[in-house]
Length: 337
Image (cartoon, rainbow, N blue to C red):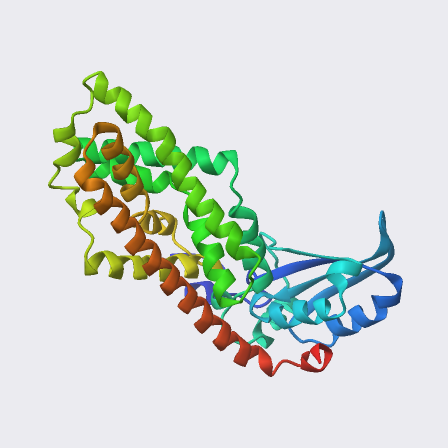
């Protein structure tokens, strides 16, 4: 029998027990002429707590250091009010997620916020994430090329486990998410970046993988027959209505993983099921001369990308509509004008 306070036996927390509050931490650099206004905004909202002000906290550039904690699901109105003051230009706004915060005051702030912390969508965090992760970087191209090669090997050997391995490595949902955010928010500046990274990344991966498969073909390691025949992986070159429906589900799952605080570790794998296998197969077919399946592989890729973008954009629009209504009644509406 477990000993201790009786409430543990009943499965309840003991008196004075604090749960780990789900909040975001704000660190602001505030010009002197905006300090009173910023503090007023923070202190007037019940979803904000632990407000502290250090008048000369910043030396370069100079400004007051203001820190606070805000309930995740109440963060949008607070950040919007701060942006309304042009603080993101005149000063700075840093949003971070603390690992653990034990505080009754933070628990009270969380209870004052609408909805569940797991469902809260902080748009500035989402936009910053997709903006950062959708760069066409060397690391992005390297991972996508490796995923393309592994997927090609999976098609060549007809081994679904290799296809799954390729999906684990593939990073391509980031530019897809950037396109969805660009269309749903809307944020036009994200659209060219997302499209460029998506198209150029796939092109670079194919341009690197196809010659390698051609070399393997010349050496007798990859035959046209093996590249074209594979009962367990034929779905890659057979686009149909199920391809589109799976892409739709993947788009919804990917956006929910991006915007909410709860997501399983295999969400990225599910996303890649609609993209990397098609690109890997196309590169393999180009290298081994299986011209009849190249168009099918790229058609599969196109169908899946369209499904993901449509579903992801619609999911973001629904979330935006819901949270606009929820936050519309915020006490900060007056500060936002």
